Length: 268
Image 1 (cartoon, rainbow, N blue to C red):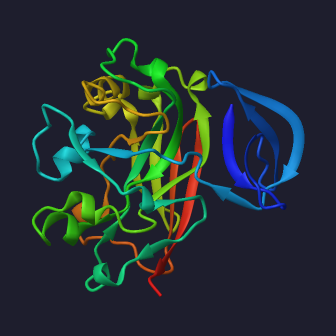
Image 2 (cartoon, rainbow, N blue to C red):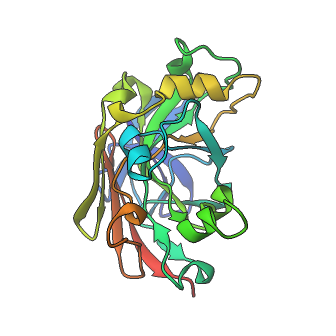
């Protein structure tokens, strides 16, 4: 099932399925994390991110060809950083270029598969890890490269946590519809031009491996959103470099999930 969170005409935040671009069928969620389609269709006024994350955990350099294009070695262990929950944005929300990251341009796109945890996970084995996944979504790990790599001394979290720097959505595809998350095509387009075109089979660490690793003596709370790394084709490795600027439109597409689209604006 493809689940959306959205605002109704009455101003209520609800969940739905079978979204046709204008309306959706209301969904009820059970205590055991199941979803039931009520069949009651309502107008969708605004799409929200499919999850209100308890934490946003990110994995860096998790695609082999991306590590190679950056000139770095394939990591032996997952490279972990965080994004502030306040960086979350939804489908069609603007990615806002901060004034401190606009001169010179430095803000990059990163198409990523997002994993949403459904129940508390601690000391989970790799074999059982996928049982803790509620669903999968499209995400964009928007990154201010100068802040990430230089200013203040390799501030990955700071350079990736400005407001609107974590677009997510528009849907969450439930885990039962994606039994193997290592079989998905992933793409990113900037103004319609294909920039990233890869596959989750190129990940260094699988989704199951990541969940198990992150859960060792550290509880992953329900609603944890894990960004699982980006493939090759990011803007800062290109010659000439390509950074997002106001007026651009960026789209992340993942097989079996959908397309997350966001315009780019400057900070007002």
